[in-house]
Length: 426
Image (tube, rainbow, N blue to C red; front, side, top):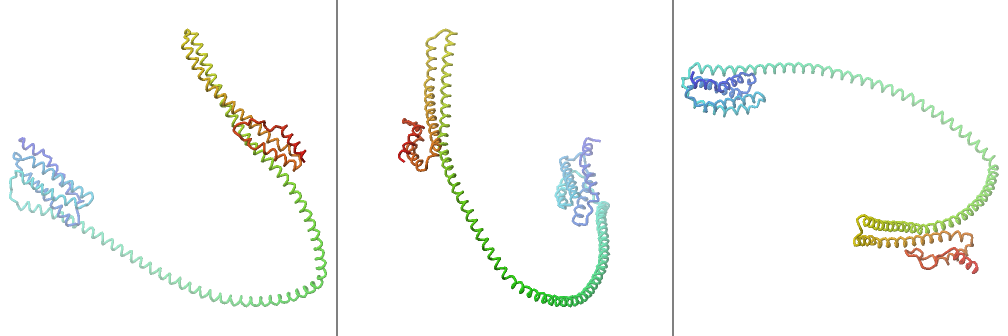
């Protein structure tokens, strides 16, 4: 064979036509829709025409570009057919119309010997269409038979349900009749029971009224006798209760006076205690100030001590370096001067520490004097105590100062002198 024959025989279009033929023989293409039947018939006729063209093709004159395009359109038709078989969307079959038109253009462009259309080829096409139509009508008949069978089954079920419904209606009627009979019987028994109980209730009520009338008359007679008998006893009892009430009232007055006297004593004690607590509150402020001044003095003392230790260390290191490396009086003088620079803040810190320590001592002394004032005055008479406090108030005002006073503090001797003066004036 020639190279043109080999190239034509090995072309992929033959496999594509065989694949399309296999797809068209699938039962999934059988349908009741006439539109689907017509499109499937058109695909079959296009496939048959392609086979006839390839059979009458002149291999040596073939332009394989047309053959390749025809193969791609046959592949597209097969793909759309497969898509329709998977989801039954007729849109895929409609898409094959354009591919068939393009396929016909490519097939007509091939060098084909033009045989006359014979009666045999026309009959073959009719037979294929008849086969497809018979399959479709067979499916329609099968669906019709299944539908008829379903209708018969539903009819039988409906008749059975109708029979059951009639039986149920009859049963309901029987139950309704039984219920009505039971209600009539119950009403008769209820009327009889109501008459019986009404008669018994009336008889019991009359009997109770008679007994109650007799009991009331008996009680009234006994009450009349008891009232006449107990009038004298009631007067005696009332007099006795009056005497006991008078004695109890006098006793309660006496107890109330004792309670009032005790409350006055407690009031005096509370007043003294409140005064002592007030003094403690006043002295507590001096104590807090003294504690704060102590903390400040301790901090400044630590700062001064640290600066002095630093100064000593610098001087000692300078002397050690001078002894080891040789004496350089300029360098030694500079380092010693730098060390003595620390003496200025150290002196300032020591001065601040001394000032805060002085304020601490001043507030401690004021706290002690105020705390000891009430114990000195506690045993004195009230008038003397008030005069002494009046004199001491002039000295105590202005003690809470940030600077200690130059005048002498209020000492124990001064307090004794004031006491003597107050007692002498009395």
